[in-house]
Length: 110
Image (tube, rainbow, N blue to C red; front, side, top):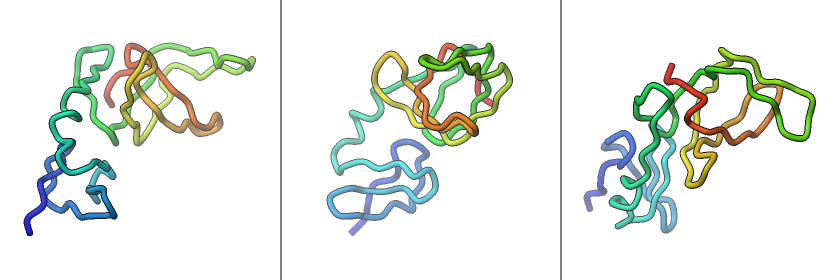
């Protein structure tokens, strides 16, 4: 049985995990037959470059953390982003701050 390539990175090394298909290269998970729906999620950075799950991005401006007096400084590198639906379309973990949701307009691809 031949499995479809990963819709994110086109890797041919996908495998089944229960009802999901998983890519070992970019860690993308999806259900069989869902490939076309994933393509609809198109996220671009502040410069117009396309982003995919697992990319590394850099903040282009200081961002205040809501509910805290902390600020995430411009130039902070964020590794292994996840794309998601909604206004804050990037999910990530930032060292020293934890899990965050960012808007793609405040990052550029590294």
